[in-house]
Length: 485
Ligand SMILES: [Zn+2]
Image (cartoon, protein in one colour):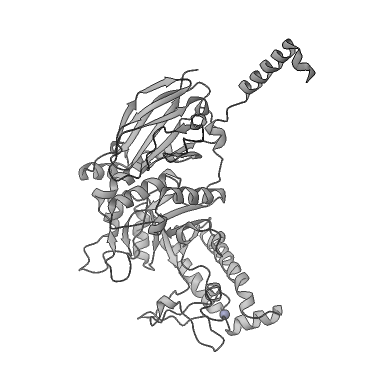
């Protein structure tokens, strides 16, 4: 091209190009973190969700005590409880625990002892009641969402629980009849009410089930809100944090098991990111014979903006004992979550890096946070306050190795603050001391359960290098403050 023959013009264009590149605004983490509305009534990021599937002690021979254990783990929620015991709900409420009562398609008939399940049930084409394959022989007949008697029963459970002080509800198997159709367990529902409704719509009884289930959940929620005079949160059992399966999207949050094959940081991050994208929240239940794995899951779920359920009273498979985690194993992590509430609540996902990032082809030095050593298992979850340019940025570090070691992490200062990074504080859970935990719980001041320390950094080329000491309890939190302008 001819202009290339004019050295002055060429230099000017090159200089302009350099100037334009230099002026490309760096996208900062507070701009990347997206504001997400928190579903009303769902646990906050700093809440401690605890479940006693049934109230303990069950009888005089039962040495377990739900309320003592909930206090040992610093619980704020009592989720997924199968109870109709008004006294238990009232006591929990008086202790400041938000109780979530479980509803399921197999709710027993009122005042039936031993419990019967005959009121308003689903019927197959032959007029027989139906049950899920794993409930064979139990007499657990499933209720029909179109049957007025079952709707009345459902509403009675809701009202009784609200009267006793329940905060919200967890719905197990919320797909009802649609679960039978989807899995081809049975052709349903041929009760007189479904048949009449189908006739009026010119459809077959199975064809009306999906919409009927949606209508049922919306009706129940509206009834609960009207009765309580407030927004009553309904969650559902959305296995492994799934939202796409019918009808999970009808619920504001999920309380579900995380299967062992999904107990890894990549899955947890992806699942919770999708949860937030949909404006939902998620509580994950996970327990394992290997306490270190449970510990890493707890740390990662909190680090990604979810709530791990305290591993207590967990079904571990048929023929196995239920699992009751010990406070010395897990209370340090839950006490830590309470203590660092200001660094959890209001923060949203802004970046995720791990030591498997591809250094060989990608210039990772351009990323906000990066590593220089290929090690399998360090994960950095970066969280920022959307739109707040001066708020400290929080980096949760979770070490998924069993034997942990010190490591280096790098920060690209310009991605954090206009004035660069000032001081860096490291927060980790403290070693368990029963008396310290008791006192913190009594005073509702958890600051003593955190070990704090200032970290030194090396600066070069707008990058900071920080050496992190071995993370003993899987989880460390870095709080990065803005530098002086
Ligand atoms: Zn029916």
